[in-house]
Length: 412
Picture (cartoon, rainbow, N blue to C red):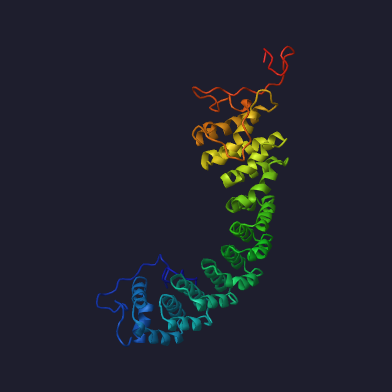
């Protein structure tokens, strides 16, 4: 029998099998919330074992009934029918009484794994509505169950309800033999958002199952610190393409702490790694602007070009006054007396244009105090290349005339 979803009542027949029509006079279970003093166990069992529709109505009415039904529910624990106990566990997860939690604890020792899996789902349902330390402890106990499905369900409950007090149990489960359990454990560790979970997440990055590694790298992105950035930067170089991609997404989530290490990658010779670095910096947005401005001062043309591409993206999607810091340097790089290539010039022009558009005539606004002072050579060129009323930026000059040193030759 498969595990029952915690919010969907379990069925005893496949969905494709039609539900038989019942005669109107035939009893179909409990048709309204029960408020009496005694509920016949046989009638309750018949309602819980009914087909789809009848069973759901019975369960919902029993969940809304008063506490008088609890003694009858206790009697049903001894029923030999596994399906009945599974549905009983589903029902108990929606009962508010402490006695219902007592019954779930008993069912957690049931010999049938489907029953125990449903108990774990029921514990998660109770934790969704009330803060119960005892329910969490029972879920932690289920993490040591012999059945893989029970342990995976328990890890899923701890993932959905993160609590740092569960860290010790999750640490043990890092070595679980089931990949499904390790995936849920990695997600639960990341959900704690606590640096104390970093050693276990870093260990899961070397798991032989790719899904475990992917989940671990996502969890590292939820814990912004230098150690997580270092682990994510290493994952960026992985031969696992999807792991590398997810590491980039996680670095964007980390934000400003990742900007400086990513800025160093703008100078590497590996063009693919360099491209990924500037794309991630662009995704970080405004917090990455200081790093990108520093990259514009580097000697390598490909570093400056990558920084300009990232700045243009930020200007389009995350405009910030801090972008003004880049304008003087970008304009100087577009100077006709420079030695930049056509690709770099195009990148600088695009960055200037997007920055000026995004900040509404930014050149007329005061620069941040951290920006260098403007010189006369920084200002005369409009950034609206190709647009009416805007002066086009000149192409780089490769030679100079002998008559006028430092100026373009007439032929050029």
